[in-house]
Length: 231
Image (cartoon, rainbow, N blue to C red):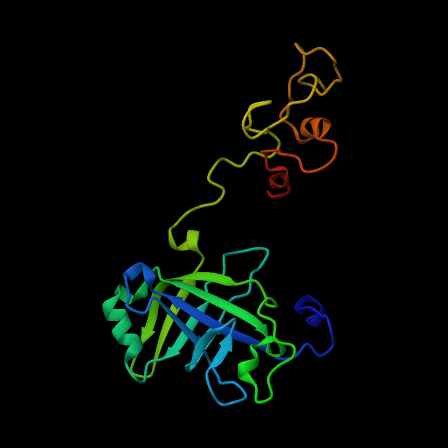
């Protein structure tokens, strides 16, 4: 059974959550630091896909994606008792812009070295998709903990999507040009009336116009038909 099948079963098992903090953009001597808030069956650091994840007290929340509203801004709270996190903040400007990757799999798929008697189900290919975020700001810092706010890449950089005007039912692509890609025979005039005359063959720039030329498969329509549903 694959991980997709497991999560639909009544008892999929424990989900293991691991984190990678990528400091390579700052030229750190240790570019990627791997964390996990626990240990394996041998009371040692967890190994996943051949990589060792250092046991370290941490809590991460707010990764849920919603269909409406703002993008997720997870909070990443790590122990600062040893002062290591404060030192990293001083060295790398609060680590703003550093990449944080959340990796998840099920306990049953962890590397065999995590178990006393090995693991016949170990499979480095069975995992959930990685969640990639970037440190947006330091929220709180004291002698006990450090709290960081994360954000997706274009949220950190202030990018707005889409990067062109949203028009409900008008395709911006040039007919038979870049973006459109249609290279077949004459189909219809600008009002979607059928024609076999090449001189009258024009795209009406509507979704229906595109469908006439691409009746099956994916249409390269450049408009935003769903925008008409919002007022």
